[in-house]
Length: 201
Image (tube, rainbow, N blue to C red; front, side, top):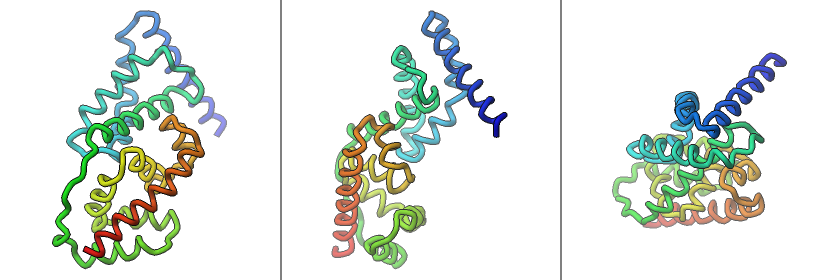
C-alpha cells in the first residue's frame, strides 16, 4: 500500500513536470499526457455520449485541456483535473444536442414493460443502477434521458447511474453540492414521470 502511494505521488509529480514543460514552451511534451490519458478520457465519454461522437469529443477534451493548462492548480492531480474537463465537455455536448425525439412505443416488449414497472417502484440507488444496466432498459432509458435538460441528464447519469456522491458530482460539474442534491432529486422525479408516461401510452 505504501509503495502504491509512493508510485501515485511520483506519477502525479511526473504529470506536473510535463505540464510545466509545456507551459515553458515545450509544446510537444503535451503528447505524453495525451497518450497516457486518452483511454481514461474515452472511458468517461463512453458512459455519456453516443459512440459516433466519442472520437471527436475526446479531441475536444484534450484541446480544452491544452488551452487551460495555465489554470491547472495541481490539487487532486492532473488525472482528476482532466476528468472534470471531460465531464463538462459531455455536458456541453448535450446542451448543443438538446432536443426531443419520438420513441416508437409499439416496440416495447414485455421485458421493457417489466423494467418500467420495477423502476417506478421505490428502489434503492444500487438497485436503480442495476436495473439501468439491463439490456432491455437501454432504449427506454436513452429516450427518457434525452427528454431531460442537459443539466438534469448529467446529474442523473453521475449520481444515480454511476454512483458519484453529490460532492464528487459537484466537483466534476463545477456546481455547488447543494445544487447537485436538489437537481438530482428533481431530475429523478422527472425521469420517473417520463417513464410513467411511456407506461400509459
